[in-house]
Amino acid sequence: MSIDLSRRTLLQAGASGLAVMTLPPALVGCAKGAAPLAAATDPLPPNPFLSWFGVDEALLQRVMTELTARGADAADLYFQHARTTRINLEDGIISQAVSSVDQGVGLRVVIGDQTGYAYTEDLSLDAMLAAARTAASIAQGQAIVPPQAFSYATPGELYRLSLPWSDVGIDAKLPKIERVAAKARALDPAVDKVSVYWSDVDERVLIANLAGVIVTDRRPMTRVWCSVTARKGDQTQSGASNVAARQSFEWYTDERLDTVAQEAVDRTMRLFDARRPPAGELPVVLAAGASGILLHEAIGHGMEADFNRKGVSIYSDMIGKEVAPEFVTIIDSGTVPNERGALNVDDEGNPGHETVLVEDGVLTSYLHDGISAKHYGVQPTGSGRRESFRHTPMPRMTCTYMKDGPHTRDEIIASVDKGIIAETFTNGQVQIGAGDYTFYIKNGWLIEGGKVTAPIKDCNIIGNGPESLRRVTMVANDGRLDTGGWTCGKNGQRVPVSQGLPTVLVSSMTVGGEDA
Image 1: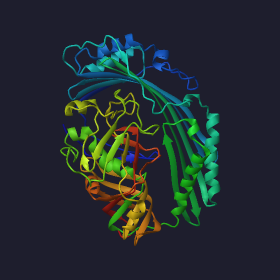
Image 2: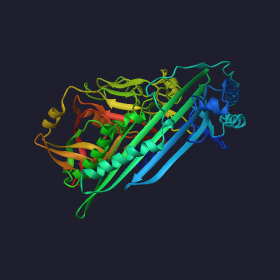
Image 3: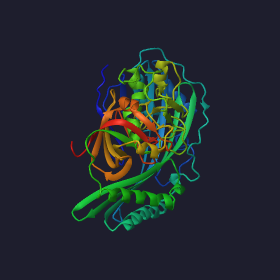
Image 4: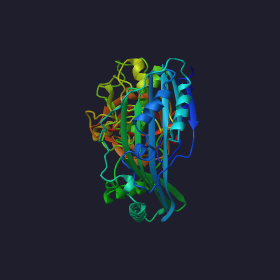
């Protein structure tokens, strides 16, 4: 088995990402048909799979029998129904307003390290049986007795909404969108163009596994993004801000919407006075919040168990060893209420979990799906995630952050004679195995003589994730999760995530500035 170590990108604000690698042998099939979709405006029933398609226990048992007819170590059915609304407002004009429905079922059978997988958008019995036979064709053993009865797992309540998104009309959303645009345009006469993007999703999943457990989850998601372009003379600058969460319509208060507009304009206008910093090896202060992109990309992926099981990650033999200073603790948690990366259950049906990856500087755990957990002889960490019913699950992060440390932000800045603050990022690339990274800083600040002296722009920071983790010399007590709409790409799959940091000082990184 070979692994193609590619460059990979964490996505924000719709940028594209790529990760290419080979996985254990998998047989993927696809059956398509005309599924009886409900209209996007119809009320969403409590269990659409049962109410609309007659997916009851008898049907699940029949399909599971076919799926495991040639043997299985594990097997599951993953039903998904997602209703999405997207609205774009550009210069006061609605350029797009779309409501769509996506639904189907993915069928998976696992034999050792091999996965057979098929999906169908047609939820008729014949289509599901055909997909089950395709997925089962990897096996050559004896049939497994399917569950004779199912038990129902109690769903969590990390993001239960009083008013589901499917019950909120576009007429209620438009004033919110228009408020953001009007606020941004009114903040500065130099603002030339304003775009506002809105999305909301009402998603339901039902997972039935070979152990006879059924679990359901209703997963809301929403996001508002404001992009601003400003002109001063012959100069043009642009900036953006966004918020995203598993929240309800009421979450969009006037204050929250005004903050999005204010941040977008402030970040844009600051660039007119910003300059490139000096180049070279410099101390870098990672600002609280959005700098968690570096923690996620350069460090977090190396702690996903599939990379370690295959010997790809630099952390493959580091469990129980020191990987950071003793005041560094790193956590991945799917249990933070209403966060974009939160999960009542993962996409294998395991409960959301808080996993301490690094405790007091020592690597204590990887992030596990069912396959890697069996390999290591541990319990899954609620990290088995997939983009949709069309994809197989794999170990993924949820809400990844570093805990507060013993210092303050002011102490950290005062300790730096010459360096920079990295505040907002627009792109990044990381080599998954070694953790070598390059990140582009959109907004930041210059530190001179222990004081913040000027805004900076247009520079990269370059380093190695595990090495940078060891070079953390101070961690402040101001940690927060960033509320932006982060989406992580891995092996061609995109999933929503959250990330965050307190203010952190890394003693040395390569800064690509004006002398580069």
